[in-house]
Amino acid sequence: MGKLPVAREGWPFIAIPGAIALGLALLGHRRLALPFAAAAAASAGFFRDPERAIPTVANGVLAPADGRVLSVEDAVDPFVGPAVRVAIFLSPLDVHVNRAPIAGVVTDTAYTPGRFAAAYDAAAEANERCAVRIQGEHARVTVVQIAGLVARRIVCRVGSGDKLAAGDRFGMIRFGSRTDCYMPRTTEITVRVGETVRGGQTVIGVLA
Image (cartoon, rainbow, N blue to C red; front, top):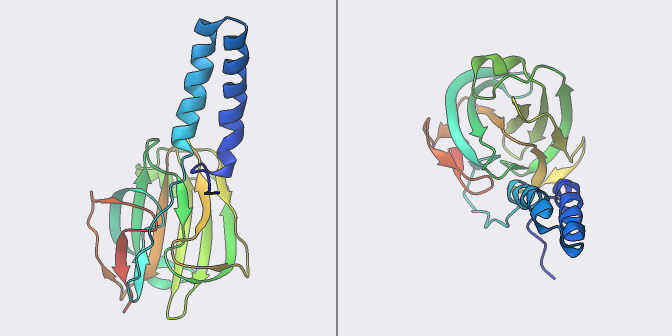
């Protein structure tokens, strides 16, 4: 049997209002059931987790999330060193499952508490976040999950020593957020600001 295309973190948000809606409908209160049915449907849409055909690109770095490229800029990352950062903004309508940009081993994860400013704002640099550091065969890459104004729950499913294939799911962020990908500065970036990307499918860079 195929995997249901919903992230496991979403089932409580779908099942509870769905059960209430069903109960009210069976009791004849169809109008009262509508808001709960709508909430269940909206949650199913938000927590959708579609299967993706992962491309095979030599030394390619895949987008870690669906969304719009917010910025492409030089940065310094404690794990990668001199880096280029591609920041991806996820609206509430985007798929919020995060995927590994490269194949490799998770060296560690680092959670940092912080604020909940709008993810597209400069103030988001102080937002709550979780950094996932991946040691690939040829390079190091860091993915940072950043909470937003509405997103206040970062889910990271991996830890030190876990092995990931490119495109593997490793977590998600609830209800609108940002995901940053730090790559070595020698990486050839293949996306531009404003471009829409798909997690696990769009190649955002090619490692030197």
